Image 1 (cartoon, rainbow, N blue to C red):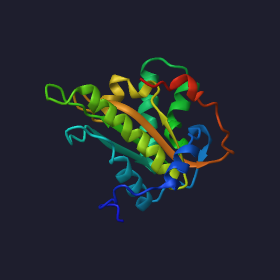
Image 2: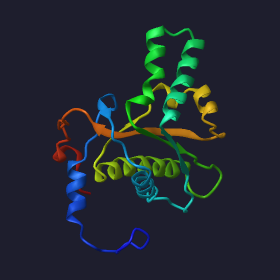
Image 3: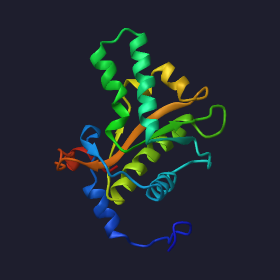
Length: 196
């Protein structure tokens, strides 16, 4: 089986184990190493294998690594400074993307007035984010899917080069956890599963 020619109907219990153990790692507790160029390429290819009604690819990626993380932080700091934010908050935003070795922005690029509903296109971008988390976990890293204020700020969108109708589905931070991961509460399946 190759990455380009998947085997259909092939049981993969290790994949289920991966899904049952996956959990987010805090972006605030990430450090190096992050994925290499080759590893990140595989992670992004895996993320792009999301469900996509109409084969539209209604999303794209913006990768922040190396000095680009600091440049984006400067943009965030400038925006908050112009809005009169406290210096402490401005400094925190300048360092925001330095928390993880790699941050991947997933941009939803849903198109209207076509037969595929916008909602389904947006769900596809969400599936891409989830695939990013799973692929990072499968590659031995931790990841955290975050939006926060800068995902919605019009000036940030402009500085990222988002086109009309594009939105940030999330920023996925990827790195190595500097602390032990703890399990969090999970849903009581009897309360969230019903049969029709």
